Every structure is written in structure tokens, then in C-alpha cells.
Image (tube, rainbow over all chains, first blue to last red; front, side, top):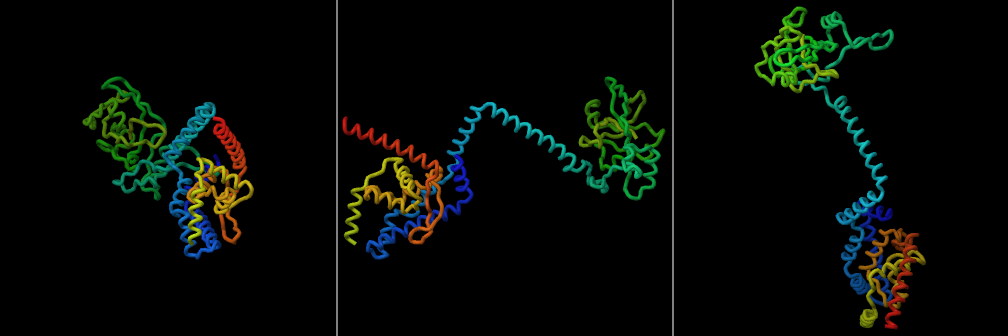
Length: 284
Length: 120
């Protein structure tokens, strides 16, 4: 079994060597024959002729030798497969262990790769070439760092701090923020009462990410202040689910926590909120 | 020139065809004594059988390569008597076992065939 396997490997990958060796082997034999005839008293030319005759076609001999090394792909593959399957059937315990090992290995790999793929390999999905400054490589997440204890202070920035950062910023083209807390809003009217995950974002949040609404517009600067007009943007999923993708929804009022809000825009389906949850409503 | 030609004809008449599978047995037996190269194997077989068995190169080399592939013999390069590089074949352990098995099978077969030819 092993010797046959090695032989076949050699026949496959060191074909040139094997050919050269065969050539030399046969040539040596041929010359020995010629010498034998010469010794028996024949002139060299006649001896060579005789040796050729006896050899019966050098190329034919070579071809037959090659046949004996030939890895007969189809027939041997089928034989090997049949043998392998037979072995598997005869040892169901071994087969089960092998199959389970493979299954676990493959699934673990797939799981890890899908995480690596989204986290490390694919860029953040915010790159609309229409907005020159939305290159995902230049998107950073800002937080506070306490040099006295060498650690990140927290992931949340108070609104006054954020405003300071924005005003004194000379490094970034734009500084935007979103509400850390999940905001639940009760959507009523037009069907059942429903609690919707919502979050507040600064007016420049979507433009900074380079995301344009699928319908309508983003928030305006003057809407982003306490006591500003009650406006709201909807996620694509909420728009589809609750409003049956009504194209005329933008500009109409919806009721949230028994207050009227004007829908100003619908997010594109491809938009992915940069957190581990997906709000369906956005307010300034 | 003529005498050799005549001898050739004579040889052809004496020769008999080998039954299938016998060639492997002959090769293994020839190599049991010492490693040999292809040319010497066919010479030796011819010699011992008094030219009744003449192994053609066209059957010798494919057989050698086939047996090598089975792992019964292994090849290595050496220098032959006339100072030429030659490929020597050597019996392996499993080749020796195979030779024993084939030898006893052959003896059983010939004795059985002989018995039938004599008594039937």
C-alpha cells in the first residue's frame, strides 16, 4: 500500500526523472547486447542491428513501461474511493468521530471567519463616494482617556463636552454624536400601539457617515436644538413593516408618545447603525 | 553471419511461451540470490534454462517496473561489471515473502498438472 502510494506520487511528480532513468536503463541494456554480439564475432554495425531487432522497438518497450507506472486516474480513483467507503462502512465508530471532527472544525472556522470578515476585513459600510469626506478609513470613534490611570474613562460623553469638542475641533472634518441610551417610543395610530427602539443623533451624524436617506432628507442644523421642531427619520425596516413602504410618508405626521412628529426621511435599506443594536427611529 | 542466423532460428524453435504470471516468479527468483540489473536478469534466465526461456526486453522491463511498484523489489543505481552505470533491482522483505508464496503455488500447480497428465 505505502510503496504503491509513493511510487504513484513519484510517477505523478517526478515524471522527468523517471523518464530519464528508464532511458538510461534501456540504453545500458542495449549497449550490453551490442557488446555481446560484438564479442561473438559480429562487426559492430551488424551487432547494433541485431540488438535493435532483439529489442523490438525501443519506443514500444518504453511505452509499455510507462503503462506500468501510469496512474490510471479514473479506474484507480474509483478503486480507491470504493476501498475508502468500504473502510468507513466497516468502522462506523471511526467514521462518526471523523465526521463530527470535520463538522466541528469546519463550523468553528466558518464562525470565526465570518466575524473576522465583517470586523477586520470589510471596511465599515459607510463609503458613499458622493461625499468626499466619508472615507471609512478616516472615521474614528472618540472617547476620553485618563492619563493618570491610563484607561478609557467611559464610552459616554456629556453633551456639553461634545459641544466643546465640536467647537474646538481642528483635527476632524466633522464631529457627530448619537444618544448612548436606547430610547423607547410608543408608536400609535395607523394600527396597533408599538414600542420602537429609537435614538437621538446630531444633525451631522448621517452626512458624516456619508449616508443619504433613501427618501426625504437628513436633519438640519436648526432642528438640532432643545425645543426644535418635532421631526423624525425612520429606518428602512420600520418604513417597510409599519407603513408598507408608503412612498408618500415623508412629510406626514406620525404619533410617538402621543405627540405628533413629522417624518422627514427614510434611511436606505443598506444603512447599518454603528452599534450592536439597530434603532428604527432617529430624532435630532 | 550465416551461422548466427541459423542459431537464431534454432533458438526460436526451442523457446516456449511463459504462462501468465510466471515471469514475475522468475524475476523474483533470479533476484533472490543477489541484486541484478535488467540485462543480467534476462541473461541469467536464458542461461539457466539453456535458452528455452528468453525474456524479451519488451516484457522484462514493464514487469520489473510493475513489480517495483508493488514494492516487491526496489531499484538503486550502481556500477556494472563493464564499469557502466546500471539500475540494480533488489528483493525487498515483502518480495521475499511473495516469492515464497508464488514458488509454493507454482509447485502445487505443476505437480497437480503433472499428475493429471500422467494418470488421466
